[in-house]
Amino acid sequence: MSLLRTLITILTICVSASLFGQGGESPRLEDADPNAAFKASFLFLFSTNVDWPDSRKSGEFKIGIVGNTPVFDELVYSFASKLVGSQVLTVTEINSLDEVTDFHIVFVSRRSSDKLKEVVQRCAGKPVLVVAEAPEALATGAEINFVIIDSLIRYELDPEKAANAGLLLGSKIIQYAVKP
Amino acid sequence: MKGYLFVISLLVTLFTNPLQAQDIPLTQKAAGLCQSGDLIGAREVIDKAITTAEQDHPYCWYVKGYIHKEIYKLIEKQDIYSENRDEAVSAIRKSIELDKESEYANFNNKALEYLSKSYYNDALTLIKSFETSDEAVIFAYYDTFKELMGLADPFFTYATFDKDFNSALAVAYETQYYKDNNDKTLINKAIAYYNNVLTIDPLDYTANFNTAIDYYNQGVYKVKRIDYNTDIVELMMIQDECVKLFKQSLPYMLKAYDQTPERRETLIALMAIYRALNDYDRSEFFEETLERLIREGKIPPHSSGK
Image 1 (tube, rainbow over the protein chains, first blue to last red):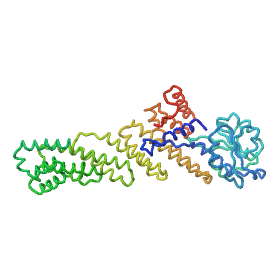
Image 2: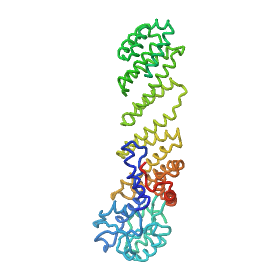
Image 3: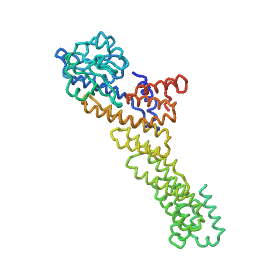
Image 4: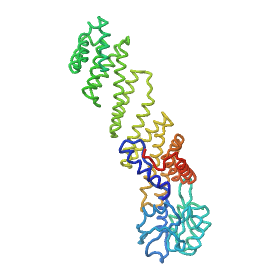
């Protein structure tokens, strides 16, 4: 949990009682991380809008997270145990990069971007969708990369690289991607 | 006690002017009854007085106003819906109208000032037990306060009262909104009232801080409505709306920060707003600022809850 989130939580607990119920002056800051929520939602949409090879259409649908990021909490809170097709979605923090090929989607967080190259190398030719949030991530080999455009989270993608990994990106995902 | 002193001083004034005393016996009697504490008896007598030639005397109407005011104050215990208060106002107005020489101006103005402030207090009382349907009554009381105070003191300045009034309304609407954050009109009204406060005092910390939080939280509520049924088009639209709200929030919080750069809540809010706008550098700047201020002992490690 980030420092900001911890602080907001502490603040919420300490001051909420004194605000409305007792005629206080200020509303409390809602405890949430909007960007983490948006990224988690995009990751879920990627999971449901990609045609995965048959070999990956059974068992759990696994999303792995590299690095400490609030996106993990948001994914667990909002989407864990939901169905992707007939597969139950699980979310895991990846502790060892040896495991990356076990997942359908691997999200490499901003603060762990230095690990992107190794993740890409390990996943090369395997049906794993590597999603990043780093400059030049597509050039490094990720299939999808989150970018910021006028404060908005959008994504760029490389459908050919995805196809080489045996992943067919859905038309909606392609339609709303920004040009790299 | 203070009120009776007014009557006594008026009676003294009256008795030093024999012509007036002789001309208004019923008024004089009503004033005496009032002085003795028989307010109901005084009211009966003064109501008779205004059906006679005494009705042409400003003192007669002043006494009537004063008696009704005292009934409102002492018997009705300042009932918010008192008709005696309305009667008092009408009578004092009549007294002012007849008092061409401004002989009773001081008394009338003091009575009006008291009555005026009672309407202001009632407006605030109604705001505290706020129901949105009360807004028309609240404004009627506030307008009456201003109108009467304007009669009592043409040079009276309302800025502080206007600011507090708008601030109280903003908090009332805000509180309603946070009970059930589905009704956007409530938060829009709160923000509109805070903007009225900021028109009067652009540096009002609470109005700036609360407006910023109100915009930010609206964005967060939209985010919290995202679920697994949200498709990509909806998600992008929600994001557009949220970022717009976060951008609206930012200038208010920056103004709040300018005023109190070492307040924990402001720093945390700026961290959150900049992060929501994907400006991690600035978010981290405020995070580091907060950590530094905590290290330097300028902000306690944990919120005091105030």
